[in-house]
Image 1: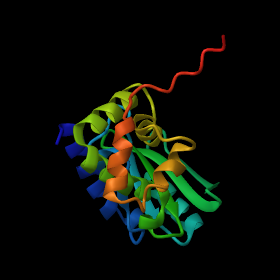
Image 2 (image 1 turned 90 degrees about the vertical axis):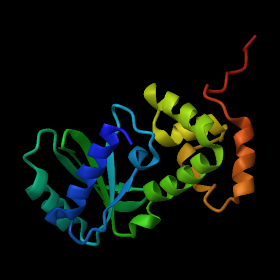
Image 3 (image 1 turned 135 degrees about the vertical axis):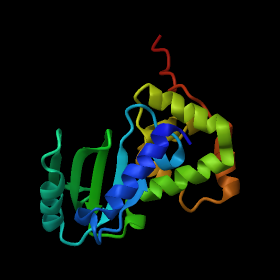
Image 4 (image 1 turned 120 degrees about the vertical axis):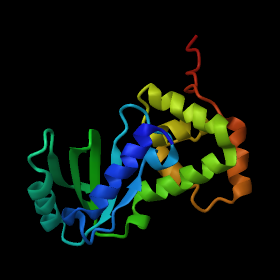
Length: 186
């Protein structure tokens, strides 16, 4: 574990105990739990909250004076959602809350699929994803590109949730780190 990953775990532990997140059942998702973080990675804190407006107000009262604090109520995937951004211990944080269990939210579902893929394919996949992330590619598109998954990368990963280990291993055969080349127009 790197010093930055240790700092991220400590920052998440503090946030998870913070009164503003009490009862929200926070889960850390994203790149840090996978060991795929890069210099620009943020802490993705996924929460289950029934009263979103009240939660947004609690976040604003608790973290609103921090430089760069933002909180918005918006629709994500057709669901009302609170998204808040602020720093914690020198790391950017994104709190994402919906009125559904964290384990059912897309970020946590992506995390589970990505962890399985990394477990099955090991270092070649990890290196491919990290290389793309270092070039600014988001996590899910990086996985999709490395594995040659077509279409929307977020949906493509969710489609792998029910795949067997044997099915996921077969995807490994198309491992690549470069985007597909467009056909020559001539």
